[in-house]
Amino acid sequence: MINKFLIDDEKITIGVAAHGNVEASKICIDKIFESIKGDFELILVDDFSPDNNKTKEFFLSIKKRHTNTKVFSFNENKEYSESVNCILSHATGEKTLFISNDVFITPYFLRTIIDISKKKPNFGTIRGVSNYVDNKSELHNVDVNGEVENLNQIYEFSKKINEYKKLSFFEEKYLTGDIFMVNNKVLKDIGYFDTFFYGYFSDHDFGIRLRKANYKLLVAEGAFAYHQKHSNFDYLDEISRKIKLNSRWARVYENWARFKIKYSLPINLMYQGINYIPWDKLSKTSEEKKFIKKIDYSNFQL
Image (cartoon, rainbow, N blue to C red; front, side, top):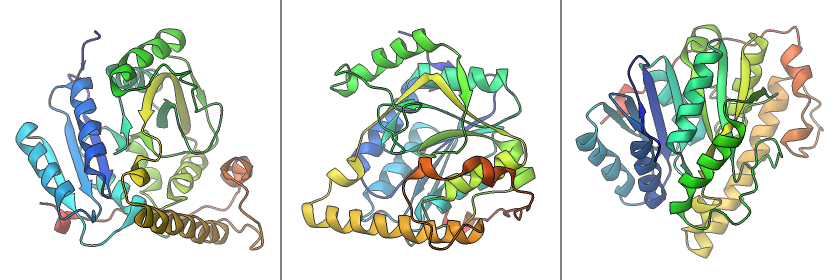
């Protein structure tokens, strides 16, 4: 078995955010501890989980396991954009790895991401590949071919992908932010996530602003992380699942409207999927978008 990645000369922050589904969060954090050792900074954000404080209490218990841990708990559902912002705003590392609570990493994933970040020190973001990325892009989605039928098989499949692709990577046109590493020095140039978007499209907006500032969005082909597809919906009862799914699509279309406003796209332009947006055009426009200031979330820290 590959050794855990040892934090020595790297200042790394790892952040996880969750809105419920504490069982997935437990697996996610266990996989982090199986992948890394050393005094890395861990930031955990409970985005007002509707679970009678189970997620908050679990996150607080991690502070006993890893002392270099910060826990934040929102008093209302602030959505993905502010969860990521909270992590980036309070990270002290030189690089921050954001992980959705339903995504599980391995030592191979982490080591590959770190090695590429050293190889390309002026990167903006780096993400890996997965069994499920909802952009449906063949560049991001890897067919596991039945080789990952339980969580115990994630490690070997990640090893297989890593041995085949090694440190190969490519540049992408937009950021899909379920799991990605940020070069924290870019925050001085473009700022943070824009809370004009209260969920969807905030990661894509961040990617556009990075490209406008001449930073690269990289995809590490040898870094495989397992996404427990639909787990943040499937753990709910049928009625709650339908309510959450309907709310999700309402947020997608609302934020698509906000995206069109910010980037002066035709107001009647229909949303046909993320791969049909003119990313190159948006990232090359001469109009400069405003710097997004840091938000202090200290009052939510436990």
